[in-house]
Image (tube, rainbow, N blue to C red; front, side):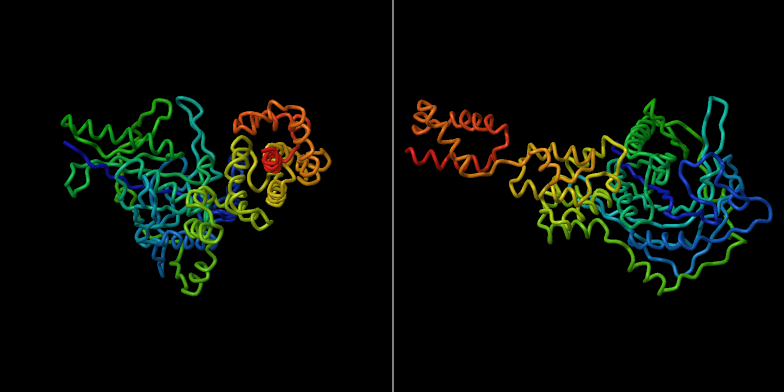
Length: 477
């Protein structure tokens, strides 16, 4: 029997606010344990939450960027459950009136564009973070408790683990470009839970699903879903019955591990949050938010191709992150030719960042310096080989490229008279070589060029030297 895989994903993205969702505590990743808390986020008796307006604005922006309808009215609800990292024993979330609904994003899978529907986008507060210190001990850091989150719930539209990863990569890209979240999975500001089931091909009813919780990398999403996909199929083919379970992915064992039997919505006993009134989202306010959404990656890719003449491949590579795209655009704005700027940005610059802790915002090779270096290459002042040396000095020491070239004597020799004289000198000193060249055997060209490069210590302009070589050779024929 052949099975069809069905996957739906819930993504939690921490919003780019300075303070938490319902109190004034600062959001600060890496702060000393349990120092960013107060009676409100810890749920002490008698305290009252206050809505963070910036978080609401960012949630609306996210919903719009994800092509959702934005609610005219929305409310908060209590989701009741007891867990060690939830000090109130409930979470303020949104149940039946989310801030956004009925959206979609398009993502490319194996060269084909697929549309994935988004059921809802809703606001809620984060829980704390459990740190497991041993086999029988855990401690809790409440700094993250109350941080503003959006939960993005997809429809069950993915039909393979690969499609799930493509959806997540696209979603991460949109949220980052929209300025909604920094989407740093390594810091927990983007996390996802994946629901997976299988069913016989042709069957409309979904199979029994299992949920993989808190996957923190796309690699683990792919491996975890592939493991579950295989487990579901083997179990059903053997005549077994799948249970609805919540699982985690063990990176060491490369397999899923049971956490608990899955709860249903009724287990959470939702009811309207009594300490918060409904929110009415004014149309003028919503339109102001829409107008402030930065250019999203698809539009930017089209612009790079239409106005800068870049290929679809280059445009896609440059827009992997908003920081890279903005660095590239600043380099072009500083005078660099777009294709050269693209090559250096996605090549040497990104390569350097991959090996360091620096970012596009902190590297010493600013867009203006990169543009100056590209100009030195284009104008023939330095060769591509020397450019590597200038690049290294600039990105490591912050030198000014033109000044560095002058001080180090790295400028190419482009004196036509000097180079022509060296060519003639070589011809006169090597008549046998000239005889072969005139006879059409140009394998000796490398010898002549190499000797001149040796004399000029590699500083002769290669393109000009090649041109003059052929001109002088023609005179001898």
